[in-house]
Length: 157
Image (cartoon, rainbow, N blue to C red):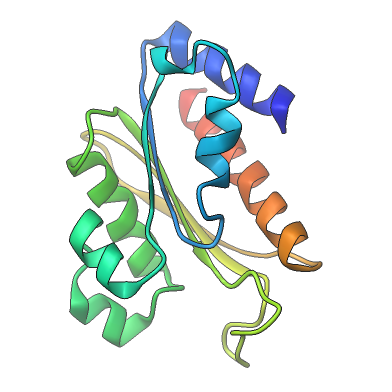
């Protein structure tokens, strides 16, 4: 992941873009990977870890109705998270993740490993994708970080 983060940082710097992260299931791991890179302050704006419903609402503006109707692990919540991250930061690109890393917390509709990731450029439309990652808690989180970074790179293409 270090090489992936390094390459992404170089691309963000070259494009004069700044990134914000909004993380639930990864607990700040995306931001940590990015800020492990020396000079990341040139292209990394901030990261928000929003585990609770209340934090998602207060820090990112996720609507209570969205959480009640769709739950935290949903396309709708991921899109509101990524949009809110841009509203509450100076960044030009955002990524947001929300999911069930396990070992508990899954359901028939949303089993452990279900993760929604959303990406957005300031002034653009958000996109979101659902993933079903395998493995234990660390494996699900690691795969989420990798896919989140890959999606940011794809936005820069």
